[in-house]
Image (cartoon, rainbow, N blue to C red):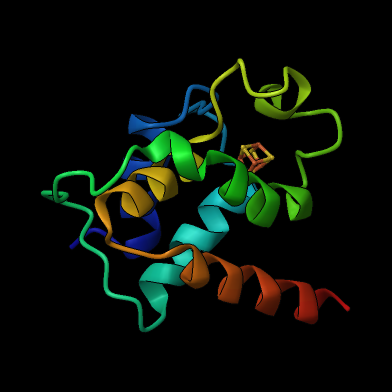
Length: 124
Ligand code: SF4
């Protein structure tokens, strides 16, 4: 059975992420990947397959997700085209997947906030 981490890499990174390079085994995971992984490891049950119909336009959540997710990302300062272009370049796969899950109503922005707050506390 495919391990969870590999499965997330496959779904979030290889399918959704324009920056993913399969030949590079990156030690430094972007924040989007870490939060998706924590959502799956934690109590939040999300289905990676067969997402529901979007409950709202995902674009509505882009700003809220960026505020919570990206500022703690190792790529935020100078390495993420999405941030550098002010949003005209696409975000990473983890971000896209989270946005999709938010739009589908599978998770709420509070789920993301909870996880990113926990991460920040750990770093302190
Ligand atoms: S969109 Fe960029 S800054 Fe935000 S989590 Fe992804 S890689 Fe990091």
